[in-house]
Length: 225
Image (cartoon, rainbow, N blue to C red):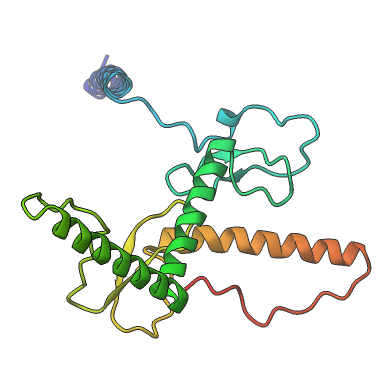
């Protein structure tokens, strides 16, 4: 065997050895990465449960008689996916419907208190309370007057405050001036209600087309500013 042939054999042996070493290193590195991933996965599962409410399989199979796609609950704080029983269903359960009903009653009560008749009625209640207080003071001068009535709301230093108009949201947000058209405390609340209003408008338009009625063109989307 001449020198050139011997050199070629040596080089081939070294190349094969290098390939074998590189393959072994890659296998070791891959096994280490798999072990690290498995340990992280175990720590994540043991530390905090995963919220699976946004997965479609979490709500179960489509119930019998349901012909609509799954949608999210409109109530703030719930926002779960559910199969709607009715075309214009907004809430996933009876509890969410009752919570939305309580929110609507609260909103209506606060709107009435802000109206002229509500203010007049509140002034009448205050007059009757002061009359009762004077009668108690004259009856027993030494007795301490009980605390009754409603505590006045603290006035905002910079402008006025408004209530968010998304069902289930009790947040108050400041407005710089009274003619402002802002109605929601955040972008998430605004988009949630707009999604529901758009879906209901499309449903009403489809029903009118099926009945052969004329569908009026909507000049602009619903006011959810």
